[in-house]
Image (tube, rainbow, N blue to C red):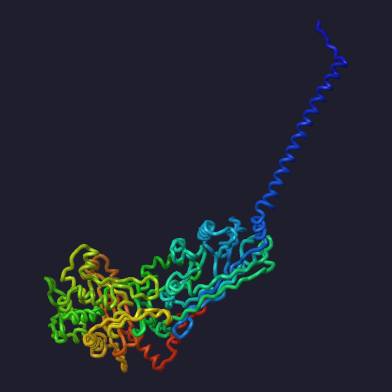
Length: 635
């Protein structure tokens, strides 16, 4: 039988005491936990207060100020570019640019902003990444210039709301260039400084996003044309809306620049080269001032003004005609017969021939086991120096080259300025090549063969020049051995003394007489004669490839034969004594020198027409509106 336990009052009393003891212990733990937690929170708050008010007081005051005070740039307008008569070539026009406040930027907004403003989103993201690496977060970034009315409406409809508070508008003066590439290679263009440029000493003082001159005069004289940006500080609310302007520092405009370019002559030269590939240079040999400079094909610098779109850049870059190449100072090509006057001077000065020297031209001649043709298949008969220049007899100059060593030819060519930069105030000028025995050993580790001189004697072979070099050299010869440095900016303080070389003036006169005969005595440019003007000149046709290569290529791909036609050259000056203007025309694939002569004739005629005031200030007015030097902007 089981035993039944009976609970006494004493047991119940002990159990109650035990429960009360446990409850008291648990409550003490909870109280202690909350006490420690309160102390920790208090210490955390005190620590934060210490950092805000004592340790980093200035830092946080500055950050707080930025939340309500914002700096906005005031972009300085660049100086205007004017012609020699102070007529505007490049001006500025008022526009609005959009900037993003990166400290308020939300990445999810980028797609909508790009769609509303027709911006390439990938380009914008890459641009933001570059700025994040180089600029402080609170600095804004310009993402689009020259907003259209539709884009302005988009910005105004969204920037003051919660949608895109990071968008801000600023007023800007943007470049306005002539249309259709008018003088584009002279003027150049502006653009945003690139990462490689920032790593050069020339642009080391600039920052990511700055606009600089990238080519032409814009780059050469960037420090003069570029102004100093201003700044204004404004109070904004949490949505970025401006409530008050605190202070304002006005921008300083860049200085205007007067060029030596004559807009009238430039317009004539531009029209003469329309739909052609090549270059025209007109200069005053008495001072070195460039009166006109044309390179075709050209490009529209308005596309570069500020930030060029990837699509436009790829289209220009991939153009096989290379419109960015300034052919006036960068095309290194064989000069053909335009080099013959310098061969004549080298032969006369070295004593290889005298004024009575003659040869018989029967249509060609043999030298060193090879037959060299003359351009006149039936020959020129008996030829002296004057007739040789007037009719550009190849056989006559073959003999001159054969009698004159390559080093004597090179010496005279270098005296005239070939094979070296002229020093024009434009970036990117090239040197060209004047071959010699030393040149061939240095570059090819081979000796010079006498047979190679035969080709150089008619402006072919390894010889290459630029149109500017040819104009500069011819001007110095016509001036009797005085060469002024070509330049594009009218600034007497920067004018350098001319380079003077003592040459035989009788020899120079004989050569110039021949150049006069080329135009006025039934020579190779007789059709370009100008009544009343003593116009002298020399035609030139230069092969781009050998006859053997051309024959082989015609069989393989006849569709590209146009690319292998000879280049046409013409260099002319006037008047015969004390010349005032020298003009060179290069007409690529023009085939015959007389094809380039009318280009030079038209420019020289315009110069003297303007000088005599028979057609004052009418040349530019005759240019079609689509080619006017200073048209209104188009979108």
